[in-house]
Image 1 (cartoon, rainbow, N blue to C red):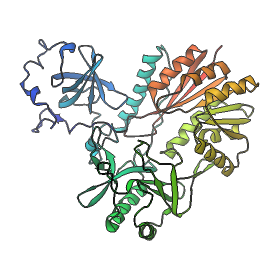
Image 2: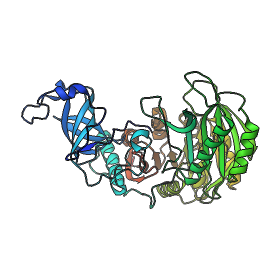
Image 3: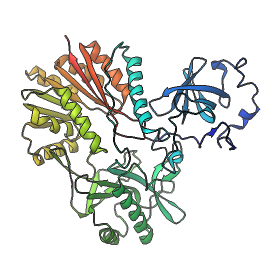
Length: 494
């Protein structure tokens, strides 16, 4: 989620210096702000300064405007603002820039509540008031569909927001490092290997923040070494803390670059003594250079192997590596939209492609005749089966494999789904799966997406294959960020 953040932009009339990153050559260029003498968009170079009127928010949270009909992306700028920007990158189709001065300020601009917002990059739009954030996300969806489907009419329902858009993330996954003698835990600033401590993050659950702070203190007291990628010395790479929404219990995992976690006995003792809410202390071993956070081996140092969690009437038992939605409150709203879109009467066969640990399939199972989930990751399939047992669901089965292979095989055997649900990664569905869905001809297709651009592209394939879009329901799963979740209902017309 990380993005570059500009330094606090100078507003017109303030006695403040321009942003620290202002290019020195930009000060020497003459006439870049003259309306009559501005150069063409094609002649603009990095370091030039331009005036841009911002029209909308882009998919990564940047302000989007145009300079001589060429798109300009300006980090930190808001719709309806007029900004002086220094060009930082030029491409054939667009420019990127940094704010030097805000000539006209948006009424939607606020002071970010987080003191390290401009350093961290974990959030992208904290400098917008919340109503404006919701409006911008609806516009991101609308623009994506206009670009990739060319639909003249599209029903986008009002986005489902939160009453309190803070403290919602039930899981923190923070890199560990040091500043002097102090242990820090946070995210790397975009484009750097500089770690920013965010252990008091206002969008993290307060219990998670308290656990991370105390773990840092204990690591300092015991002098447990953090891992350094530069020297390849030390042990602890990452701290992962997840809190259950029902009982407030915490699952704590140390991801290490070593087989042995130094002084683990005293570490466990102090955690148990100071944090009674922690019910699991685990170690995950990740020795390689893979960008993945977790390694393949997990050891329970103390406590329960799984964290009990629930969504509505569906119960889950989560191991440290198991995926679970980060915002349970909004997940219920999203899954209710999925249930509405599926239109189940109790007689349908539902295929849940990309089923993961079975969350959507188990949510729909009480209303369907049968649910079949398909997932490529073996551990997730095992978790899905366990979750079905924990919830007393006996009409849901989960299969390991690729949906684009299993779905046509089932159709050849006369097993034809009435509803297909997909919840793919940000890259969208693989084209063979879309082709398999079109060929299997389910009456309803429910597409859950965290990326409006890939959603719109995939919907164009389905539109060409005989489907129409009934509605799109946005859900604000991640307030203060530019990310937006959608549930889209497509119905077969041919």
